[in-house]
Image 1 (tube, rainbow, N blue to C red):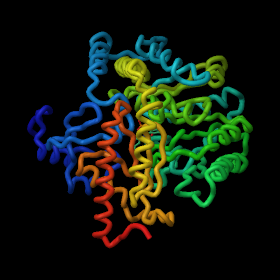
Image 2: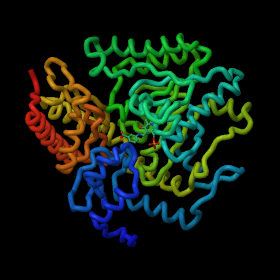
Image 3: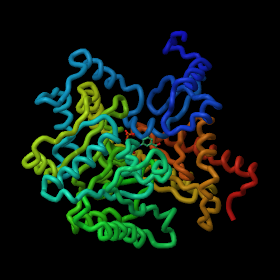
Length: 467
Ligand code: PXG
């Protein structure tokens, strides 16, 4: 096999090698190989360039993670400096490194409530594994080892390890590679436009939260360890629960003394206009999982924020918690995360999302995208938004799920210089948090054009839109 020059990839060669050797996540390899992968070469700000020279607006911030945008040399410098000083040491045997400890301290000043301690891992999935083991361990330490069940929601995404897959509520994932982890139960999701639009949003919110109480009573309140939810569902389609949902969920958790875990992997670090989605949605969690925006995706790192109740019990009564990863608190990732948090804070990026670009994005989306004939509903807050594709918006008729309109739209976006994600028949946007109002206008112009192209493709397939 010839050596490859990584700075000057030859498309055909890379595509051939990729087809031969590389198995991609969440991918039909046969279909991909028939088409050939697209090679992303470089990036700056909110833009990507592929190997054919196309300039693309990254409307997804990578995979919901590049919060400070691409090309931040400060982050590269932080990594380089730490690599030259201490590229690796672990945090297992009564040692630490200064970036890991300083990151834990810094996070404690950003997280709400009494989330004062941090357990580090490398991915959202590992953070979720950690949450599962930690909440179960907590109840063992508290003398109630029978409290094992975690409750989550259908269409939730909590990662792709066996624990993340099991805790998540993605039906397609549950069908593959089981058996899943025991001791997990799911309740309905608070997706008002898709599942409850015949009710007013407040009634619907209460009905969805009531499903938690029903499930707790079904499982037995004394068997439930925790409820886990994304403040806003991300991979499920950027679904914002209606007003009142989280308050009621929280009331029910407190009533039955069940731990509340916010999975902040997507909502954390400014996405919703506050540091954490919990602050935007009015949640006071006992634990939080976080990843992605913690380092803006520049290096892998995740964390579980642990509130005083759980941390104190584990520390004072639990002895050794036999859990951890080689790279828990990796010093280079931690150094990059610290610099990333400094940028988010010093440049006022979170504030800007909360006060300026977030409201502008939401308003423009509702006005311009929301009036498009193919869009039934727009929801979102800050710089995350989900848009439901509708066959007949006046009559609230959604597309059949086997008609993959989302993918048709996504492909048009891809071909026209915009990355927009399709989650089934919902289109999702989650751009870098440094996006400007002008860039938001460009993004929306492109999205509208691609929605028009999607309508044209549907017409060619004999499918018309509207009544
Ligand atoms: N929790 C949440 C809420 C997530 O969104 C994870 C946990 C797992 O994180 P890791 O780092 O293990 O991937 C996630 C990840 C998509 C997509 O296509 C979303 C995620 C990951 C990959 C793809 O929307 N979210």
